[in-house]
Length: 80
Image (cartoon, rainbow, N blue to C red):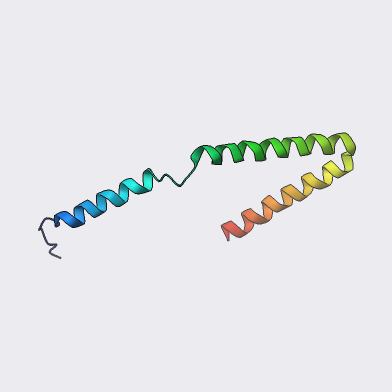
């Protein structure tokens, strides 16, 4: 198969360069906010585990069983 060896027109080259740069430097994506949300979710989960542990060990065991079963089902459906 013979591929054309012509150079791309300048307008196409400029379009490709500008579209690649805009994906990396998008001002609408707040990367620091996403990190703050992730830290908040982890702290909320740890706080919930501590609160449940204080109130009742049985509830703690039920929640842990539900979490492990959820991970197992998610893994099963993702592998399948």
